[in-house]
Image (cartoon, rainbow, N blue to C red):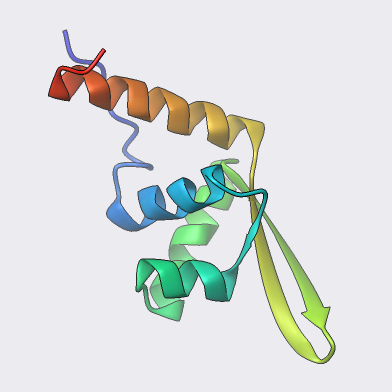
Length: 95
């Protein structure tokens, strides 16, 4: 029996963001945008959805006078990502 895939993570961009954050301590908005190819507006909307779900934390700071948005995965986000990957393995026959 197949387990449900988290609809929040099933979005290509949100899954890409979580994949980036899983592999690093934190990432800034520009790094994520450059590595996903997303537009700034779309990325901003998707980050807000991940934040609302409690999967990431967003901190806004400044480097000199330049604003910087830092994203970090949360324990809830790590758990959701790991569960998504495990459920996906069931669909493709990987144990």
